[in-house]
Image (cartoon, rainbow over the protein chains, first blue to last red):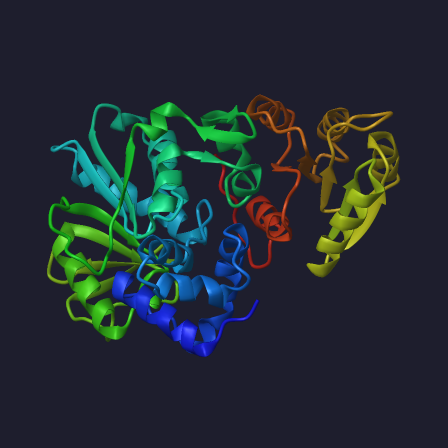
Length: 275
Length: 130
């Protein structure tokens, strides 16, 4: 199934208007890969036919499905390893020490996809910091795609997903089988919450965070939106809080006011001039 | 790096051999735990054994016990690769000395990820103990 360039450009404008995510012309293959299953399952002859239907006056619901399908949601447990080693060895111990008097910790996985990133943090906190029992933990995951947020909230994963990056010792201790799936322990699930949110829209109502994980998502936004998101993140961090970006991403040269901190082989960013 | 693939399914042995070969790893194969133990005792140890659970003659767990109780073999790292997927069973394998555990079916990137966790991946240094 191939996609006509004109239809692709409609799709590109639709995705951009709903999410601010930019699909360049070289992402044509992605449209084919993501939309072919939808076209087939709905009985359309081609991806073009699905897009034409979405453009029609009755296409509103279909438009939502296309935007959902086109917004990326690839993820794994402890993705890239090093940032999580740094969280475990230095960043989280520092935050726990700093917040000892308030006994609270707020962490946001801002493009949480199907939840593995936030659950990885929750697993570290549960396994390595038993003293946090009784603390006020706010572990929030948000994503543009409502489908992945639903899946994240369920906390159940296939064996293929379990195989990707999750140490066996944690599977043995914190998961149980539910039919063909693996369900994360209730004690972990109760520590996290997930909801749908567009990073390019208003952040009103969000709490202040000790740690914001904004990894591998800025690459999908145009320069203006990228700067707007990084500026908002600066105002959403508690004094001395940390921002984590993807390995290929940096706020330097995009917005002012961040200072990098290299720890245990991973780079985090803090707001300049704060302790 | 050298790996020993231990599985009674010829298809599974070839799939694993191809994935490991693509990672630049030399691969030998054994058809069950008993054949694998004989191969290991013969010397020239592999860095890692990828071991199925349910096999005739000697199971993967029995082989794992042999490897961990024989000082001359104990440095071989063991990755269980099996369709046995109950978390309790995973715990049993880890208690018996498995370094990591992969559930069948799997994707090639999952094999590379597990090697990384065991400290045998490209550029991997220390391993994290959970």
